[in-house]
Picture 1 (tube, rainbow, N blue to C red):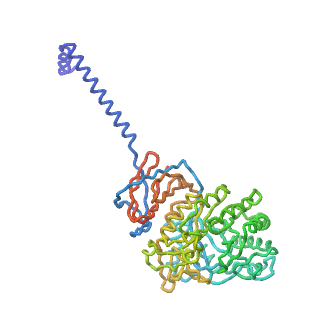
Picture 2: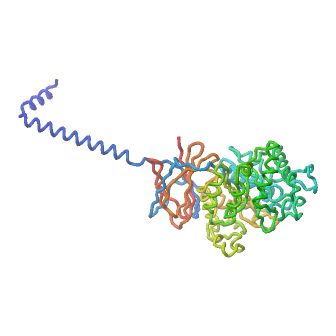
Picture 3: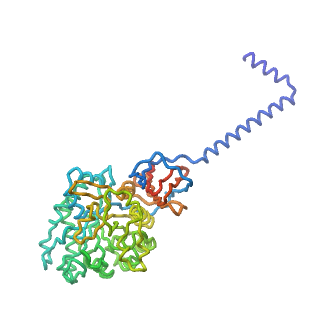
Amino acid sequence: MKASMIHNTAVRRSLPAAVRRSLQGDLLTCIAAALFLFMIFVISSCMQPKPLDAEIFETSESGNKLTQLTEFPSSDSVVEIALLPGETYQTITGFGGSFTEASASLLNRLGKENRAKIIEAYFGESGARYSLTRTHINSCDFSLNNYSYAPVAGDLELANFSIQEDMDDIIPMIKEAMAVSKDGFKIISSPWTAPPWMKDNNDWRGGKLLPEYYDAWALFFSKYLDAYKAQGIDIWGITVENEPLGNDSNWDSMHYTPEEMTNFVKQHLGPKLKADGHAVKLLGFDQNRDEELKKWVDVMYADEASGEYFDGTAVHWYASTYDYFPEALQYAYNKAPGKYLINTEACVDAEVPKWKDDVWYWAKEATDWGWDWAPEDQKYLHPKYEPVFRYARDIIGCLNNRVDGWVDWNMVLDRQGGPNWAKNWCVAPVIVAPEQDEVYFTPLYYTLSHFSRFIRPGAVRIGFKNEDKDLMVTAAQNPDGSIAVVIFNPEAKPRGVRLRLADQTLDFSISAKAVQTLVIAQG
């Protein structure tokens, strides 16, 4: 033992017993206090939220275009959004747009570089990664003219059936998209009308399918699926009829009542597709999701027999491009909870695109058909509304009300909003000037990409808690475990956000008039 230790021990022993006990008590008190402070530190550390890591992408009126952010604007207020991955809802089928003759013909008129640029932007890994698409069977309003794959009247066996009309435009566009799409994409095909010779008015527009041609029309679908398969294109789903309530006979159309469509599917189309070995998904309705939707699903799913061949319901947004009709969507889901509920068409209609003018897409100027033509008691459903807001609000609203897929209309249009033989001009996310070989990616393209790029097929929508009435939110967990959160801020000022996931938090802000997607890696 060292001398110093012997000396200290001797000194302590020489102290009176009372003093020694006092020193020992003070020491124990110090140790206890230290232990108490240590426990407080540990408990406090455990209670402190852990940092949450996420990549954040934003599209905003101020100029962000799916821009990854690392710095954020200051905000006077903060809203907490809590993710609830234990609450699960529908499985996502996908997001995307439509292959139309109008879009495909415009690509044919562009230079090779710009054509490839658009295909990559929609389907490539560097772009929107579209996963769910649509195309038309026979012609539609966004065709160059009226045509049918079965033009010969009285050809009940459809011996003259041919998809030659699609070989120069739609099919090459689909094949180029398939070539650049890493994960592939689903295609839904919809007829606007049967050939006129099968209809009671012998016209492309309006009218009904004559009962004596029900079997021939069912055969038509089967031949279409076979013909596209022979081109290496598998059609994932079909709708029975685009907008069976009609369009006031302004362009290609054919009418059904809910009972007529359901009976056609039960007795003709469903059995024919099954007999010919087509495992295609069959979707009913395919029109606006207002009160009419309830009437249709009531008939489509009236009993097991009537619902046997329907794999789901397709809807459009034109009853209002502002109101997404949550009650009607929930009603349709609850009527057939195991079935698909897919928005198959939406666009800024009745407008001519604004060329290279981002400001317009964020401004409250756009109107839809109902602004002029809706009945007085329905005009409130068709206000002037920002085009970007229409898309962000609608997709989030649809997802939060059980819709599992959302498909935009034309992928590409020209500066007039066509080509369109009916002069039914619309806006697309990508606008081109083929004569000058120029391309304009509108803010709508980036808005759609916030969903299609980051919420992948097979993702499951999850719950969340958001008490802020101004911010719209949706969230989904992808098959790889990552979580995508989309936030829409329509207000004219930034909003601070604290995102909470279990014991992890992330503080950031969203710009004024902006859409954000946060991607949280898991696992």
